[in-house]
Length: 257
Ligand code: HXC
Image 1: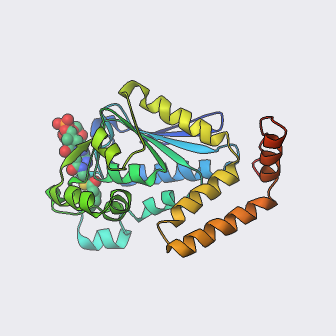
Image 2: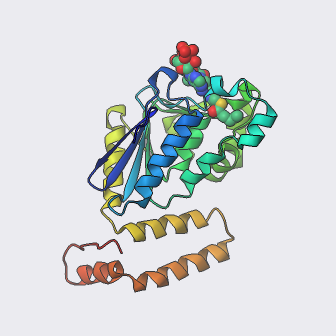
Image 3: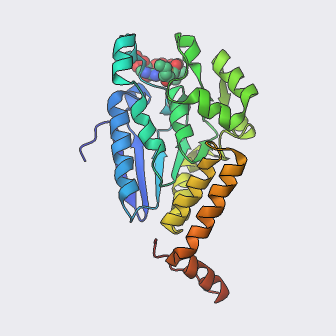
């Protein structure tokens, strides 16, 4: 496709989306939202893609929603456009998304990172929800996803002060899963994605759905959901193959169905 604010590529079973507005530190405007969502939806529908990698640049994963684009808006326009609602489509995709965060992940940048399933941070990454310093609050899910990710104490601290945290603190509080040297971050995300993509796609999707159910249901309903999905997997070729391969001491050959 003819994208202007992102770069899209594929390598094996991994699809990559790289934010590409270097002059604006990858600030997320409406066009970027449309392009990221559209590229990701295409990967999600492709049976040959098993995982999606989301990258920024060395200086910034994304320095936020585009403040210049937002500064002139009023309530009526924001409400009529349901500003930011388009991002919800990204979180409805079933293909696992691995993000590499280098440099700034602030405001909408931090919120976009939190839409990914696995977060790899570079040692240079800084995270924050500085919206309060602009007279607004997080608008791309930050007040909800950050609170679910790290709990009330840290979420209130970050959202009420707008302070930034470094990669080590982000890992300590559970916002990211790994911290690696800057030069390795994108490659780590690519190899994590390749590892996921080498698994059965429907099984990986169901695993993602099951984990996400933890955020939407009671414990009892979530466990019920998990167990039913587990049972359902016994109707797939990949369950038969995976267990047969183990018993016969060979590598499984996934049919992805
Ligand atoms: C638009 C942005 C931007 C943003 C940076 N730029 N962040 N443009 N929207 N969010 C632009 C700058 O205007 C500048 O362009 C260029 O990128 C380089 O930025 P500098 O500020 O010159 O770089 P530096 O001094 O290194 O500072 C980096 C920074 C700072 C600390 C990340 O840019 C910054 O504080 N940015 C805003 C961070 C933020 O508040 N994000 C949250 C946004 S609100 P020019 O052309 O001027 O040189 C949000 C929530 C939305 O995301 C929900 C509420 C509605």
